[in-house]
Image 1 (cartoon, rainbow, N blue to C red):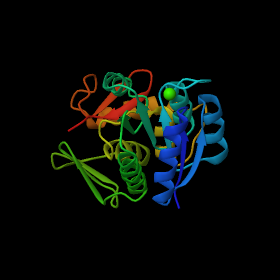
Image 2 (image 1 turned 90 degrees about the vertical axis):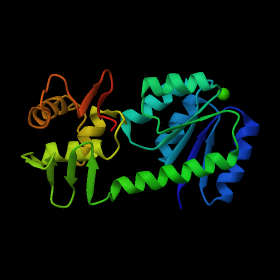
Image 3 (image 1 turned 120 degrees about the vertical axis):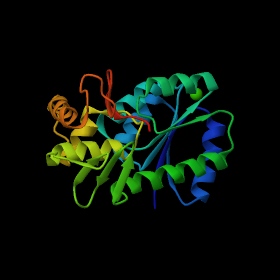
Image 4 (image 1 turned 90 degrees about the horizontal axis):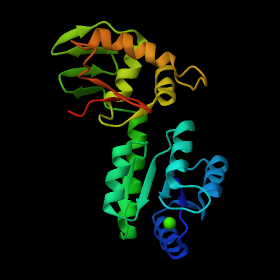
Amino acid sequence: MASVLIIEDEVELVKVLRAYLEQAGFTVFTAGRGDTGLSAWEHKRPDLVILDLNLPGMDGLDVAREIRRKSTTPIIMLTARVEETDQLIGLELGADDYITKPFSPRIVVARARALLRRSEGAATPAQVLRVLDLEIDLEAHSVTRAGELLDLTPTEFNLLAAMAAQPGRAFTRMQLLEAALGSAYEGYERTIDAHIKNLRAKLEPDPRNPRYIETVFGVGYRFARP
Ligand code: CA
């Protein structure tokens, strides 16, 4: 059974969301402040976080950033206005989905399910990823660009496969390090830069103007949207 942490200060909204999510089979934890929400996340390690943007104690953006620094737990951000959603998407801080208030609780349940399916899917992905003109065979650990085989190290392959599985998503160096090496090595995030540089040298026709792997300043890297 999947667990969800709702971090939201509107008591009525929390009540309704809790009822719908429990009805849908989720175990629900709640927190009414940003700071208590973050410590609840530390203790409960839920499968999914539903996070309000404007919170007392600690801003929702800071909560998301802290969670992202330590994990890839899917986050659904609740925002009050469409413009806020646009801003958040511009920030690319790692929330996986955004829902603008007011919303139907059914939408939240549907998005939560979809997001969990997606994150489970990332653990057991399709055998072959086809993005842009790349074909990434996850079983054979081989990559072709426009039919031509590329010679990548296992680390480079893991990095590329992780990013290409979710085009457009920004990954932090820590997340990439986990993807590349299977676990987090705090303090070694910058080694990712070296791997990315090597990967680009092999992958990109012009590594200084990358077509496939884009730099997200202040965050990390992402695979280009097709
Ligand atoms: Ca609020």
